Image 1 (cartoon, one colour):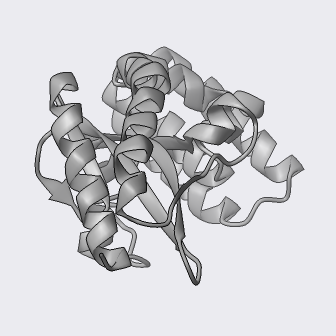
Image 2: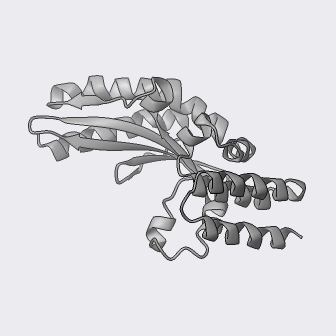
Amino acid sequence: MTKKELKSKLLKSLSEMLTVYGFQKRIFGQSLRKPFEGGYAVVHLTFINHEDDFDITVDVGIRFDQLENLIHENNNLITEKEKAQTCTIGVEIGNLTIGEQKRWTVKDENDIEFVSQDIFRSIKGVVIPYINKYSNIENVFHLCLKDDQEASLNAPIAYVRAMHAVGLAKLLNKTELLEDVIQQKMKYLQEKKRLWFAYIYGFCRTYKKSLN
């Protein structure tokens, strides 16, 4: 079998196994989706080709549609298709569990069953609890409020994390927290000399006004 055929077979095997956890059987490129109210969870496989085999890494993402639509409202830097696929938080499962990237290797068809089963076990043990926790929008709000190691692992781009925190304050109608959230995030971005400060400042002020 060609590498393309092996990858397709692996994805199909995983999609069939994951239906037990509410994932759609349909494959979206190299991703599998589990819908929930207001968004979806996604398991994405990345294939790293070598001459005689290929490696696989797996990451999990959580998307809240209303939030992603909000923060991309005036974003002209990415396409509409790209906007529809952004995740609110996400992490590669090796970094989540062992502190470094985890890879599986496929050389030929004989590897497919073992690798797909092993990836499924990792998804069952790590990804499903992650989805159960972070498909709750309040939990994601409290995660994005932080700028610590956990927050950086799951939402690594600081200015996007700041926008998510402010956007979630708006969507959850947390008017009493918004000023403190803005001040905290602006202070962090200034201290770290992060790019896009002016843009994020404008974003924050716009949604502060909309809550008043």
